[in-house]
Each structure stands twice: as structure tokens, then as C-alpha cells.
Length: 167
Picture 1 (cartoon, rainbow, N blue to C red):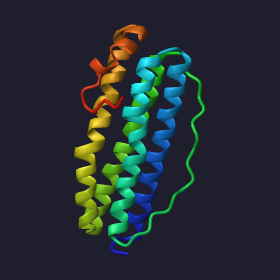
Picture 2: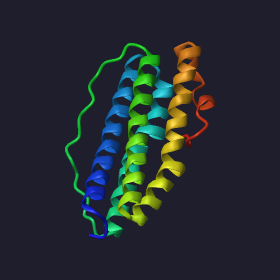
Picture 3: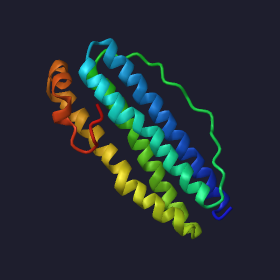
Picture 4: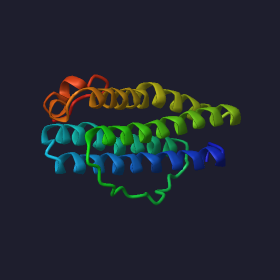
């Protein structure tokens, strides 16, 4: 293994958090659909929830390049029921910020341990991927606070500026 044990463990935890983020986002999708916000629910699901597995794969792929076999840690499910869109977007924003903070911790750890490849990977992940998901989550939360839910549903694409829309 070409990285320190602490870095290895932190990367496995980050991948786990990405899969948990997928569960949180899927649960938000289910809640949106249950409240008949079908248009935004589908776009949120395909554009956002599905992306978290891909982020976890990016982490695993980087680990494999460094002869560090990823471990699929147990993932917490998400089964909360939400009765309003603003709460859903607040939960999403809080969750994505935790992933972002964990990645920042890994960058600092890798820097301290001189795991240069992971420091560079982590910085690229932060700035090229995760920051866009944080910004997008914040945008959705701010919009959910200011417009009626039906308006959010109809114009979801108009409120999605930091990630690609996947139909």
C-alpha cells in the first residue's frame, strides 16, 4: 500500500459517506415524489442522487491506483419522512457539507503524512466535484426558502446551475 494507514481508513470512510449521501438523496427523492413534486424529484434523482455512487467510485479507483484495496463499509440507510421541500433541502445541504468537510480533513491528513497523491486527489475532488455539489445544495435550499414548492418543482432546471441536469 502506497499510503499511510490513517489516510487509507479516512478514504474508506469518505467512500462510505458518499454511499450514505446516495441513500439520503434517494430518500429525499422518494419524499419529493410522495408529495407529487414529480418533475423535480426525477431530475434530482438522476442528476444528484445517482452522482454519489460515482464519487465513491472515484475514491475507490484512486485507492486502487495506490495499491490500497477499498473496503465497502456498512452504510446507514435513510428512511426519514419529510412533509416539506425546505426541510428536505436543508437535510441535503447539511449532509453534503459533512462530506465536503471530511474530504478537507483528508487533504490535511494527507499533507501532514506526505501522502502527496491523495493530497492532490483530494484537492481536485474538493474543487472539481464536491464544491459544485455544496453550491448546488445551497442554491436549492435558498430557492426552497423563497418560492412555493410547486414553483420549485416546475422550474427545477432553472435553479440548477452547478451540476449537469440528467434527464
